[in-house]
Amino acid sequence: MNALPDAAQTATLLVCCPDRKGIVAALAQVLYGHGANILNSNQHTDPVDGQFFQRIRFDTTELHTDRVTLETAIRETADKFGMSWNLRYATERKKMAIMVSKYDHCLYDLVLRHRAGELDCDISMIISNHPNLEAIAKQFDIPYHVFPITMETKRAQEDKEAELFEKEGVDLIVLARYMQILSGEFIDRFPSRIINIHHSFLPAFIGGKPYHQAYQRGVKLIGATAHYATTDLDEGPIIEQDVIRASHRDSAADLVRKGRDVERNVLARAVRWHLDDRVLVHGNKTVVFAA
Image: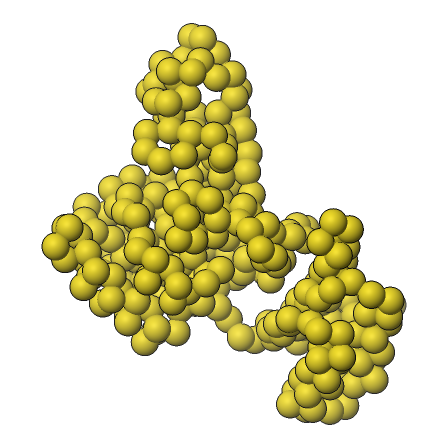
């Protein structure tokens, strides 16, 4: 019986390109030809846009060429099919930064899941515009940085934050109820690398106080949406959503309480899928190869 491969000796390849015959065979041949063993493969074709998407996870233990040679072969295949592609080795551990204001429920959930080994990354830092949650950072031994935001200082503070992220090599920024609207200049520096949790089932109730908006409408379902941040407020590519029942007996405060449970779970799933290279962005949509 063959032993399971060491997770540290695996790699994940994500590709997106115009759909045509021969893509799957070409990629499989490249990997096989260099000694890689495909562990699992998922693919999707969008018939409307004519786009092909694929995620391939493979074992590198028996590669008989080096990584440079393998990547050169993948690049040649990508050029042939007009592919955009990304290859990540499991040994390349991602760095994540969390941005938060005063609400602690999503922050606590993420750091607890990280401690339990559910999130495959290093949490490099927690950034906030308030000092209130520093005790949580100390509890989990995570650097905590405060950048107070005012109308006058917003752009300068964002520049400092972005420079810190780039200096530390942060791969993913998570807005865990960070109650500030990021500037387009900031977002453009980290395309498809900023995940926001919006406390509403988008596209309904965009903007502030969505639970209060939902209460005024008397909705029977409330939800949460995790999406990549773009320059269009709350309209970025959606990664994950979920809902919970509500009734006429629920106050606005009840909806907030129920919604926080959904927010935690939706954000955690979106972050985990991004870290596991399960998300491909195409236009304003995502293809998520969820486990």
